Image (tube, rainbow, N blue to C red):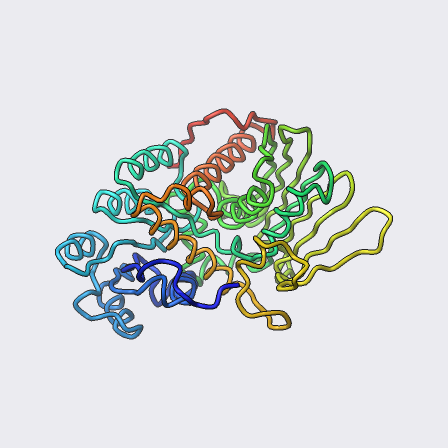
Length: 400
């Protein structure tokens, strides 16, 4: 159980790029990183494309005015001069900026925690991975839902053979908040998400389903996609070529099959985030709307609902428990869990502790690259008439 005691020798000096007053994700980063005040301490930031607004925001969340910078270049340069300068930076900016900021941060000697999808192409991902290795730094990806500990319960039960051989993977992440064109007109955060120059070659595939795809890989680390077929639509025509709805069929190397539905036009849907794994003996199902529950359905037996924090759960699941049974946990605790693991990974990297690095389950640079490659293949399939494509191929995409 996590009770706030330190997991590393001291809190990491942390900075943010983006995540200011108008951002949708900055607060999630901060509540994740600062939930355990023994893991990170926020020292600096370039919070906004508008320097004055960014500085005003930074001061209002407790950052010294002299360390609220007009842009990330100034922050990296000035912090490097300070004895207590930042050593890790989170990037909470639009997709099209991730690569250049991550590269600059690594070249400045900083560890990086970046929003998803990581970059536009897997080639960029491989380049950044090589740079991170050269610099001895960690690159983590904020798949914020993946810290829900019941996902680790699913992972453990699959490893233990509780559901038998996996046959079917059924994934969904949908909502209805972009069902009308008005959603693109009045929200700054939405505007860039439907602009290919900023968002990249996808909308809901990159914005929503990369979460769910990574979570499925966390649950089933030995299940690799062999080929996939993607059929995507732009029901709001002004969003084309970016999709607001997509269906992805997948064949896995072990013979299992999968499907994923992602949508921002599932009208009336408040929370359609679901993972169902069907085995030869039983099935497991998890919903984001009930993150502390896991359905375990054994063929021929009554349905069981496993509850978060109970002693019958696996050790790796309860290790991430925070509040105890009967007390609801949710997305903020999930973010806190992954940020704590980022901190532990960074501390281990700083001390050449490879054993700890191998034992940690968190979204690292390889997970980010895998997500990029999944998106590349989805786009390649859709643009070629929704055909099956080999996942091992390395497609080059024109993202301009």
